[in-house]
Amino acid sequence: MKKKITAAVLAAAMTAALLSGCGNKEEAAEASAAVSSVSEASVVSEASSVSEVSEVSAVSASSEEEGLLAVIGVQEDGAEEIRLKNSTGRDITGLSISVYGEPEFYDNLLKEGEPFKNGEERLLCYKVPEKTETAAADGPQVEPEYLVQLVFDDGVSRILHNFPMEDAKDCEIFADDTLACIVYESKSTHETVNTWNAEANILAMAEEAARQAEAEAQRQAEAEAAAEAQRQAEEAAAAAAAAAAEQGGQQNTDADGCIPDDEEIFN
Image (cartoon, rainbow, N blue to C red; front, side, top):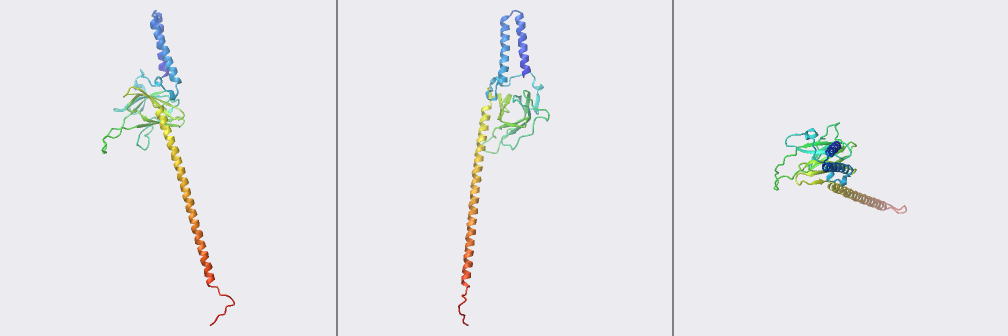
């Protein structure tokens, strides 16, 4: 992307110089303004943090033919094709897709030894499952919702939730120390969508659910410990009662069988 911006700047600069040389000062000024605009957009795009991603950071249409981009997945008839740009600051070594309801992610779509490098653009090709009728009375099945798992070169993984597999054409991936998000233009609404807030909310809900689960596990452990202590106390009390009863019975037997030494015995 930097090379494209640099080329655009140089082309605009050359145009400005040519026009200026011909005496067309007004057109030269316009060309110079274009150079300034491209440079400013480049700086803003480079400086934006993940949480401050704006439309300037969204992937723009490129003059480069899509066929020249490295392909992630399989390019086939009926497959969705999404232009991806890695703006995470790290190389991506794993990219897997799953549909909500499925137990695990599919195989890694990136070839071993060919990481999706930071700043690189590739073409994601994915054939979505066919929509089928269900036997339920509510009619067609619910639209599939996709999860995309990213694995970075340092082994850290992040998940992109509700990935717009059928609603995005150009998509830029961002990440920080806590989560990953995407910025894309919706094919249905033609609006730029930034999923940062949605991903942050999902992360917060997951953390809250984990805290509640941990608290519930702690309460369960305490309840089980209390029940075990009660059981042991009851068993100890029962054993003590049994021992006392046995001891009392033995004393009664000894008393019944005792004959004084000075008692006379008559035949």
